[in-house]
Image 1 (tube, rainbow, N blue to C red):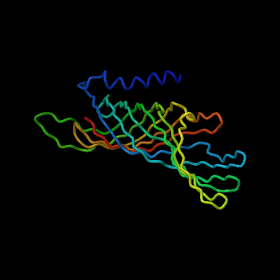
Image 2 (cartoon, helix red, strand yellow):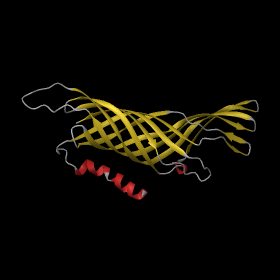
Image 3 (cartoon, helix red, strand yellow):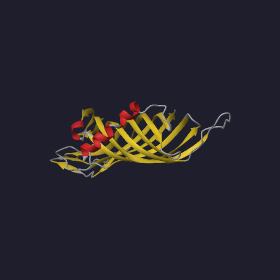
Image 4 (cartoon, rainbow, N blue to C red):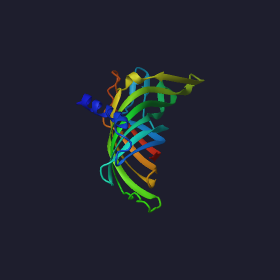
Length: 239
């Protein structure tokens, strides 16, 4: 089942090359924006020997962007495959108790994904002008929903560990590659809404929420369930 899903989503990039740009009801677009990512799941306090850690990541903000193709089934309903680069993870600010000495973690867990969404879009529309008439540009509004296959290209934790250890100030910066603690692939559901301005070439604004439906934790020493959640604001142009 999973392998069939992967094969289906890896066909999406081919559509950008095999479908001619002159096809009726077909447009291409680019978008860029900001993502606000967080992680959720069974974040519980973990105690090993004399070390106690409680993790509860907050929002981390990073760049997102990519390209897409939109095929109009009807003037109001369209199918939109995309290729995006997105950043997920979380900002971690938590206390660590080591032998009754409390230290503070302040860092970012950053995971980079290549994302292949397949979206279904329902919206208002403006009829294309017919020569010799000219009609001014206008606004359209839309809802979108779909699924996405995502591939994890990197995962890294960067941060500082600060505190008072036996009367001395402790401040240590650390960084580590932790990609082996997460699954390579993720499956997501996407919902969103937005508006566009223009006539043929249009400027677009989308607000989306991307939610993992698979447990991405792959650490054999942990039985926690971890999931990604991302809010994205996307700005683009449609040709």
